[in-house]
Length: 148
Image (cartoon, rainbow, N blue to C red; front, side):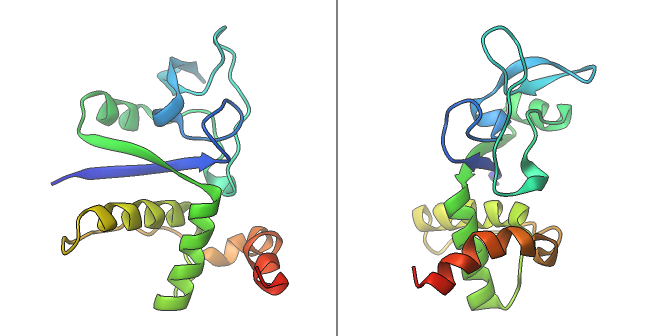
């Protein structure tokens, strides 16, 4: 069984463009915890970006860092556009408004399923999307209303 974690890929791979700590980060100390962090070459913590405020953080808990280090979980990133597309798709086909945080997992699962036709996928959806309506109004809904 393969376990995949999907992080906030934001706008790209550069520092300040994402919040994908395990994909793009390196070890360091933040808030007294040694873990993986998004930091510059001098060890200074960097600003992050994600369409999801809940994922916009420059570090990750030590449990995830350990699972990554021992190879138990493979982590990848889903960018803002993929996450928003997953929100839209989940709403259209399932009638569920997922939290934007969870939509990153949906985007990752979509990619995995495309590479593994016929296989089963289990996705952990947490939270609900109604709390994300201000963000969705400025991004996804605004685009839909504009016809793009």
